[in-house]
Image (tube, rainbow, N blue to C red; front, side, top):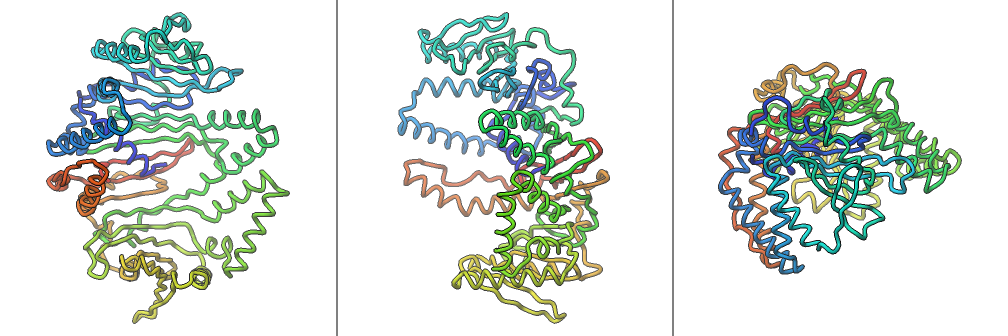
Length: 576
């Protein structure tokens, strides 16, 4: 399923690498690279390289910002200061730094590359092999020079020629526990560890006729990044390791937990990220055939009409539907399957003790009261007079509003009784007789963070502060109040949504970018001051990037499932 942290990670990789170098025509270099990857892959991350991605990257919002002269000057100054500090503090060898930098420029910024883990043949003491394959092409001479410098730094007396399969490679003389080799196969440079049989170079001389099958379920857009993980085989390997080193009892426990959690039937995950005009596109597929059990069976379809509870002008909004009772039961069943006579009774007894103390039923009170469907949104700073900092709101549908409210009140009273004044509870009632429960932590209250919750029309509303909670109540109870479904930006991107949606998230990229830049500008002087005290001379001001905000289109992320597995799709600037 789509995860925002995956988008942030991919964004960071692309910006840091500065994929600054040809448009994609036909199959991507990553697709071609999968033809030569070794068998028994457990994990691989690959990129088409900057030479191939330059034209598409420069059209994208990420590329426009990265290539801005002020951003380039800012990054160069920061890098220069960091390198100088590194040499001063750790005596880093200047020549070694130059070699590493040249290697990064030749590889990360330019050529198709794959980094992966392979399952080693059975019987091996270490069951994993590592590899890096770089398609150097017309940059081979540059990379040969870099490799030569690395070997010179290591010292020729410590190197030896190795016979790996039918090929001659280079390696370290005294490195027998985890053997390492590197060398060329045509225009491809290979580094491999714990691969004495040469699995990493098996297909380099005679590639497979077609790209890997795991790419077929996921559309590509030039493959700025592709990630593949064979979860099923990885879990089997972990089980074998547990059995070997901890015993059959522990292995049985591990397998029971995986079965109850529903992970035992999980297949492979494939993620592909690329560019489409000004946007980044990220698609993923997790192979998980029906019938499903455990945690993944707790994901239920959403109704986009839920978003009518979200105000029109929000910075971001989302919807999901998790059966929390099922998730709780699955976790308890996993504990019971592993240790029915020891740990499970102990956990049960502990939960009963906690419930007695706080006078709150966890499973049959708080959790049971939640129906599953939820919406959440963020109000940007400056939008509300009574909540200048903005904040987060969560709205959850309830099966038993009275039961939920009773348990929440009891929970607040218990925490307050133990907090010695650092947690205080209170309530307000509006003209319609609705009650707003306020949970205040004095230091946070100074920053307008005063969690407030209420129960209205069969929904629990939890907000950062009372003003936001009241806004949410007005949105729910009003029949004709505009919602995010009426937002022009949302309607523009939320077209042709698939059936059976499991989650949905909308982002107003312009508002979020401007808000983030403002917050960074406010915090930057303090960071500069702290850096100066450490001997780093950072730029006094951040680059001016406001001109890019007006060009940004909204972002949309969603996930859905079919009989074969789970899918996710994201399209947006990826700035968020």
